[in-house]
Length: 77
Image 1 (tube, rainbow, N blue to C red):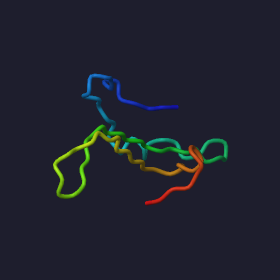
Image 2 (cartoon, one colour):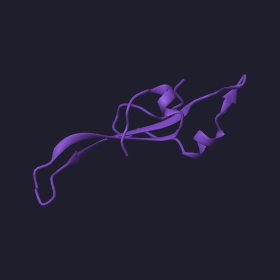
Image 3 (cartoon, rainbow, N blue to C red):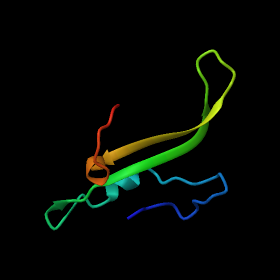
Image 4 (cartoon, rainbow, N blue to C red):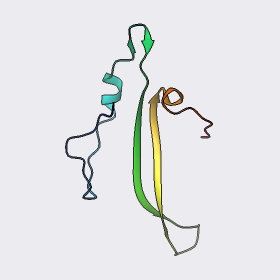
């Protein structure tokens, strides 16, 4: 299930939910863990230190418990 704000859209001004919402989700159901992960993606521009040439980039982050249950794999901090 995806929980998203009603105002989110494709106009470049997408809304986000308050991170406190993640803590309000049910953590277990029928004795099993319910994974919950917040995802945030931002389209931005990056450049090497000291350079003025920028390239577009997708910057992403996650928060919450259960990421490995939703998307198994190796990760690095």
